[in-house]
Length: 277
Image (cartoon, rainbow, N blue to C red; front, side):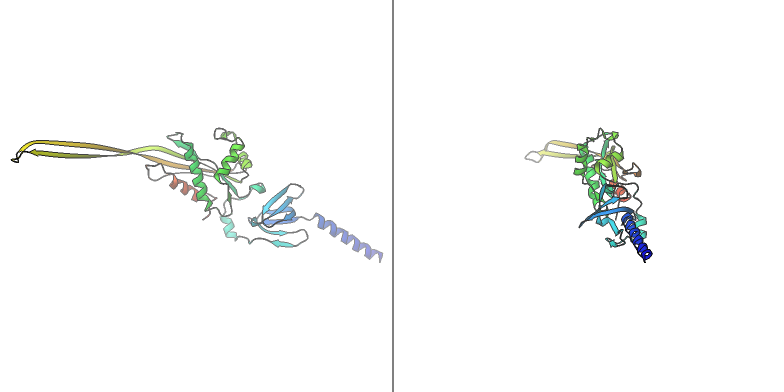
């Protein structure tokens, strides 16, 4: 009888130790599996610590498929994407801090006019245009608005002049994002179109007998010249580990009179790995 009691006691003790050492398993919608301890679950997110660590991370519930608790209980939060859809996502998570995941920042564009630095306002406008377009085609991603991005960079001492002194990993850590979009707009003077208009007016003076007394004429010539521009856009996308995942340029098929870059910009954004239809 004593042996049976001892065996039951040892079994219960072993089970208690096993339960204490077993980890919670968090399965994310992108397929990542995180092992550690879920310490808190709120309406929109969960608080999580990795095995052997004490630092707490906050994860969005929308990014979590299910949690398998150490007790064996399973909580399901979201439906998994079909495998074929997940395979279409060319950008895979790799050594990325949890709070950076699926976040994007767009830097102010560089603007060059005939290979010389141009107006800063054009670069800021291109940044805003890229944000507006990509915001409508970025399901699953969070894009920092340009004002937040620019203010955060300024507060960290990252100006356009000092930008080259920072790696993309440095900028990702400052902005708290996984992806950084860096672009440039290049305008060059193309050909000129001109038109000439001539207006002539002739007057004939006569006397009372209707005889011609004199003829006078006036003419005016108007010359109108219009400058046309060749425009191209370059787009470079980096991850927070300094990896370059997209680097393309596109030139507008036709020159224009206002230097518009919308066509090339949207062409590149539609083909970048962060674009979603």
